Length: 69
Image 1 (cartoon, rainbow, N blue to C red):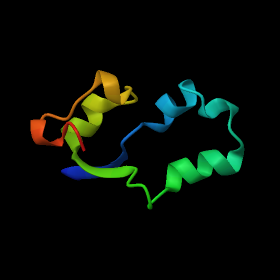
Image 2 (cartoon, one colour):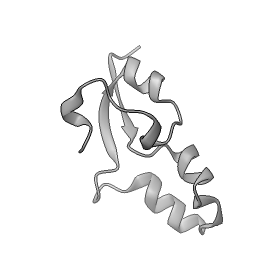
Image 3 (tube, rainbow, N blue to C red):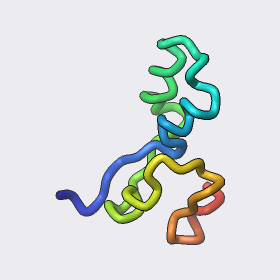
Image 4 (cartoon, rainbow, N blue to C red):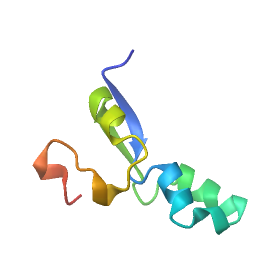
């Protein structure tokens, strides 16, 4: 198991619950694979596990300096 992973800032399951379920397939694919608007972050395995599919408003990374990025 890796010590870190790459994760979406807004988990895809949360995006689905928040309205992406009504989007077209291409729109959802754009969100899932968007490298332009920095949708991906490197996180520790522990942070990735604790974040799960939570809304960003309900989870913050342990490092406070990353809360507003």
